[in-house]
Length: 231
Image (tube, rainbow, N blue to C red; front, top):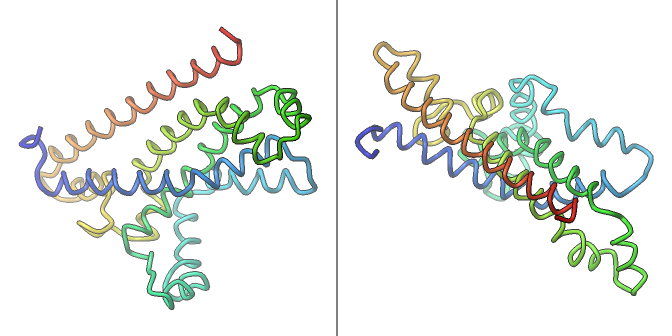
């Protein structure tokens, strides 16, 4: 396997794994909170929040990348503030993780929300009547029940982050060794004569990772169904 992929290809695969890992880890706490809000809270503007959460799935990825560049670029309002404390995300691997995380966020939230909506609210109400706070009810009752959904959502989000292209190349460009993730490397190899073989090898890696993620997600989803059914 080490001889099958060249150094540049391994570099792209390694960077993709790094970006996808930190993207998934970074959006997980906010994803759980957002899913909880959408599943359990009723408030004015709930549909607006739901629309904003799913906006990255509707917008062209290039538009999302451009908005990130305008906001988090060195001349953007948020990017300028971060630069003052020594943090730069534009044209860095951390920027690729940010772009991948935003694109994967809707998938993570949706998976966790569906899992949370499958939990009987009476279980949470029973814990609350015993004097438990909302936070403690969530930690001791809701969280263990939705854990398979969290795992399934995280796997799908990780796979999505691994395959992110449009927002990434727009926001952080395609810099070998710094921002060139696996899909960007495939694109680069296809632009040069004789690069088709290297591109195909990376395509195979992408397919294996994606199929593995889908299979794992399906297994976890079935566990959710069995738990809800009480079998």
